[in-house]
Image (cartoon, rainbow, N blue to C red; front, side, top):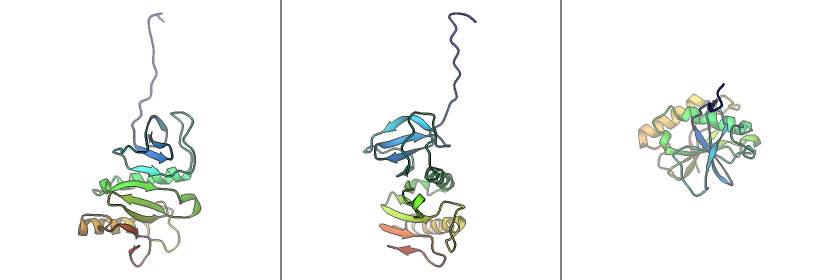
Length: 165
């Protein structure tokens, strides 16, 4: 080995989303590993944010953000990314995830859509993931909005109907 040779081993990562906590927005990769970039709370990003995690941000970049709520949020983002209406979702709120409360999707029209359990973790009598997606697709086709233009709350978890609040 030569004295003037510098060898670097690196692993490139791609930003996937941001996680919003009380300190701002923190960039993570698709597995939830913290990347070395954060944004102030008052700055908008082009990512759909996972909001209100239960665990603190990892101490340093490269560490995975702990919590089943973050895993559920990442699962939701992978599901949302497959649909043409994805740009209408600005946030996946996981604040209630560990307390058996619903995951909520916040739209750019200020509507909170009660999604319910994480995909594949639905409770008894809750509409399954495919049914929820069918409902959002129907609203999008009918109104060009997954919130149907509704401001407030929308619950898509009931087997028989979609409820507004």
